[in-house]
Length: 73
Image (cartoon, rainbow, N blue to C red):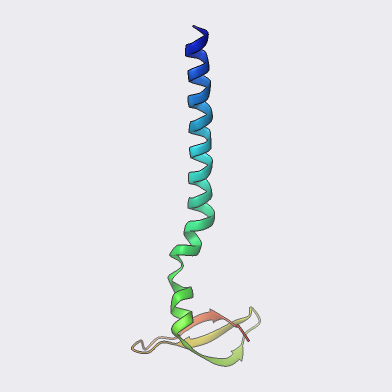
């Protein structure tokens, strides 16, 4: 009976570690990977007018609407 309890405890510990790693990936890593605007901003041509939030209006080749990107200096 003690062996079964030890196996159950280890299973719970492993499940908690997997859940912690999955939540870290989902809430911390995935938003940075999935942020397509940052990749668009790397390709965009930006103006010099910075607003109060530190954002600048940029344009992409082939798109008519401007996008907002963080001002990088």
